[in-house]
Length: 406
Length: 106
Image (cartoon, rainbow over the protein chains, first blue to last red):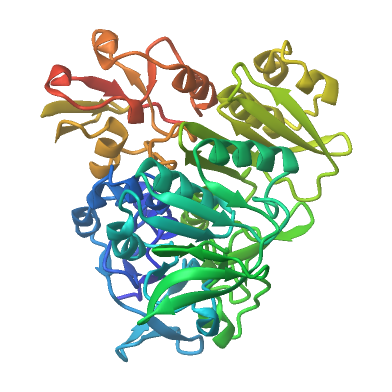
């Protein structure tokens, strides 16, 4: 019997690959190897509805567990892959099994960065947020009146802050940079979310540096700032970004550059090995990029199934993202890297707004806060390669639908 | 419980019993209905769970809010009067027998 397609990493990219493989009627068997105890599941709700306790675990699963067996896909959970032997075309598991592959897919994601142990990073009560297991560990601590300290004002930290406030915790958020979301958004978007969170009672502090976390009997109790100030904490969430899981690929001598390098068909430097999702890095519009998003994982996984089925397709998907905080729905389309101008489009209400990113006259991306029309029609406008003027976008009377369809 | 039927363009059907409270995007992916992806998990950001509701049933599936109405502009197959995003339709006994037609892109 021919060797299977082996998929390492059971996340969104793997699920999307398998779904397309099945839809295309491909006969080649698949072995899916995952490190966690669960079938592929959605990560975005972890820091939102799942942490809030509004979603049962099974509803996170992208497909029910039985689905894999029904599609004759072998799912090995709780299994870590230690190494790739490219000469023998095998992966070697931590248990010592050697598994032959015909094609190999690396969908191994990224890992949350933690604080070093010597500044208190491994005290009890200090968490990172990436998996179901992470939430199951921290959620018992999300009790009314407790003090939640969040290190890092990125999307994970902000989403957790919103959940904390909704559950009645006292929330302090520390950002080392001079504004939250500095790495990913323009000042106007940062301003919007700062107002949103302070309006909901978060003690949000920017340009603040943490010196160390202080514990008692191994349990975190407080944080010490560079200023000398001490902030009490019952639990601490570290949301300082994540790093691509490239160790497996590097050890197998696959090209890496802030992620496993893939070409326009998601192939690594070994033509039998493909990669998809947060672990990959690729060239888009002349820039080497790595995306942390469901869209990218799903679209790359889908593309690989098409490529293996013989379709002549390349990866050109337009990135999109979302976040939910309190009653604000943020929707983002495009990548704002390289922008040199932003234009504000006022929304229909006080709490709605969109930020349009331009490089000179070229429209690159849009952040839409409670402004689905800017997102939906903006996406069409970008896809069509249209570049409305700043004056058109800033004028609330401009009909975006007409602009998209013109 | 509701018995839901998804009809494909080639006339084939998928019929499933769906528990109350689940949305019909989740029900479709659980039952392997092709072309229903639900990438955003039902938070109205992807428009990949588009269905045409059988006209007799359309009114029973509930109101379309502003966000869904906007997102229906983004579907791969162009929207029609009976279009819905199936993540916004929640199963209940009132929908027992519901028929959805699945648009197929390309």
